[in-house]
Image 1 (cartoon, rainbow, N blue to C red):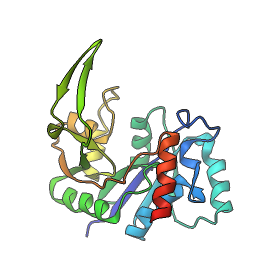
Image 2: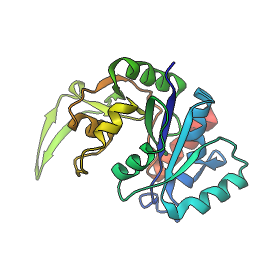
Image 3: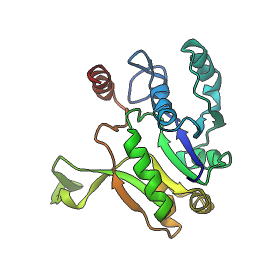
Image 4: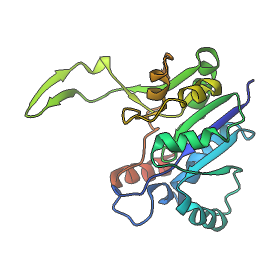
Length: 222
């Protein structure tokens, strides 16, 4: 098996949460969201290289949380950048694995099965993202006008997005563009094809107070 790394990007400020602390540090089930996320990867593979990218001004707060909760998952702490693109680029400099995943720090419910699907498929194809089918009807909005779109033709994108490390590093040689909304968009702009695999429905990104309520309910049910 090729050596595997994960870059966990957690640069949120919690503005949509309406709270004073960044969303990745908000407690869910008695502990910060970010700790749940990191434990999913540690549980999947204890030897995996975990690289956590945070804004530098959050380092001391994170370290204090690790002491408070006796958090023992081994990881490297890397300074974040101006945008997500720059944060991932900084994290890539620390990667030693031949395969690398990039994951949102506020997606604490990714399953080991999804992680394995992504890594296994990326070994063959080089660039993989997990997706789920849409359940709501969708419409394209243009000013005051809107038009129905067939939901079967679209997918909702999740993380971890997994790549051969050589592919992702080559892609991140491209200059920054505001069109880079995730790692797949960078890799695609560099000329590589993206392969889709099945994600897991509960792998939601916690960004609003409602998401917190759902997360607490999910943890209690689990």
